[in-house]
Image 1 (cartoon, one colour):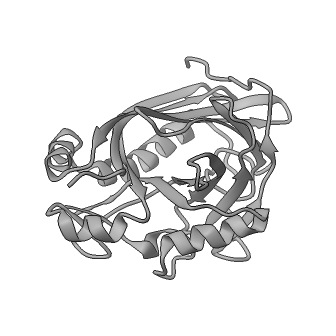
Image 2 (cartoon, helix red, strand yellow):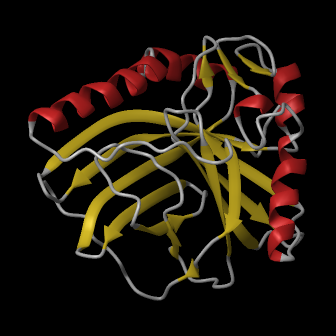
Length: 267
């Protein structure tokens, strides 16, 4: 059985520009899940489960309102804040691997009946289990898509809150690219990017991914703490966490920009 959903294998790149230069790269894979297919995939595949245990799984309670409710219903409800609707929603995320996952960023691509992209939802999660979803309409057919949003959620102890995200998005096709340039009043601060190539979603492909990217979730979590230690040793200033008023928040954000805010630089 073939699915519209897919696996995207690639690499995550981080480049910090100041006050101390810092860089990291690591190999990862993400799942692109057509939310209409999610229950069927859980029934038909041996290595993948929906709201259950398997080698790989996706749980509704890990995303959206964290209530365990239907994710497409949640996404469409968020989209209503823009007075728009969608026929199909695809979610780009990391899966649970043997029951464990951490998703710093989950991206939802919302499509109209004619398959035209109408909005993108950026669900940002921090290590304090707080999350904020930036809801940004898409009006321009030009690719890549360029959007902006003012930062609303504490993410890193080494980055201030007074920042702006500049998203450069190549929507999923044979390739997907999610690039974020973070700036403050002084200019470019941080560049982060996931660039992946498509593979069909199947048990065979999932098995290959497990052995090609062993213990990916643990590596991501351990990597976050290891890189934090390196930044402390470099003498980076630390910004203290202030708990959010609500664990789950969302808002319609900035929108499109015609500027090419391409701030990637090799560290």
